[in-house]
Length: 222
Image: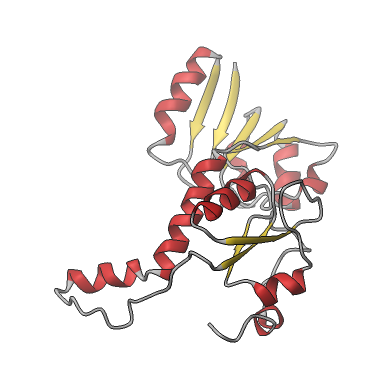
């Protein structure tokens, strides 16, 4: 039997993991606490740990897990920026979910965009207080605007398709271009975009990519 320490457990996690665990001889130790250097010891005696986006899997944690005999770190996410993969190399295997419902993520990004430009969150709070004033809630049309997409992997390309459906012009930046997309430099993207959407992993190179210098390069007519 494979034993797995399941960190940062949510109520919705248990039914599906228990069901498939029983089918594949996997026993889960469900833990509400997040993984960090102080809670790593809870994985002692387990073959693997299953972690989420807010668990800390740095070099210290990985070394502790390794001494406890943990052989696998399984992420319940597509991103793995919270894992020190260099420290894990040669000690513990790391797996993630690269096809983590790219349509759901892209559609949620568009939902957040619509919420922002149409002030839906502010309108919701205002109407709860029986204030039906439209002042400050006008927003702007996405149709005809330019969206700059940084990162054109699976999620980024789906996001682009949705934006094109809104009648937006799309420009993009990626170190690995694909056909059918208009790529520009980062400086051009910052200068010409009405909306910027990030669909790239968090790395040392992308951290704080959107900063004061990038904002200053933006268009001044919006």
